[in-house]
Image (cartoon, rainbow, N blue to C red; front, top):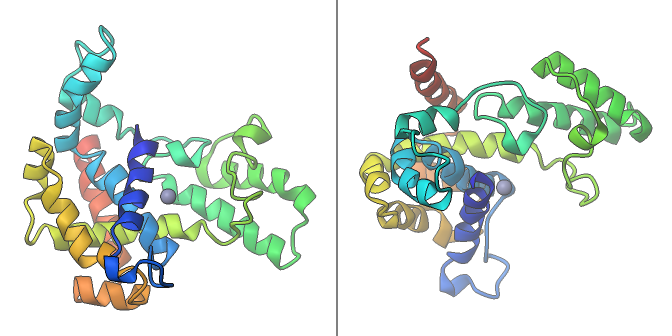
Length: 241
Ligand SMILES: [Zn+2]
């Protein structure tokens, strides 16, 4: 479900460039960091919120008869926000997610600078997963080979995931100044949220550089502490810290 929401965020961004940019080089997303800010915005900032859990629970209960009858919205909210070190990036929680990105990015840098040979990647992958996440990798399938980004040649892509997650938190804080985000999620009316993203981000395509876009939308520079504050507040409340 969360992968579908994630890719839906990418799709909304790509589909909503202004018509005047169609068939030009300015059509579509401006950078993969901004792109991932939209996908992870819908996946996590909205999709893993308490209000969305309330909205989606009846649909899940009717889709999986008998499986979720005793599940409350609060149960669902806590289940989809369980924090634990794991093997697979795309299924990782918001808190540990960036550690997966760091492992991959550090290894890519070492390979590209000839400090590390490709044949040694599985060993180094496993070593860093143990060091950063404390997990033992049982197989390369669940380790170094889990992502298609190697064969796809997307070297250097992974920081986009961490950057996008952090950009998204800053967009959400700004959006909340004019949009009742929780109210939209409770009623399932996503139009005001989508309208804000379309007006501020999507319609511009590649007209502005990522830095210019952030300045225009936020009126301030990128600040990763907005994201870490969001994580501390959300997960501090869930875990009673
Ligand atoms: Zn993505």
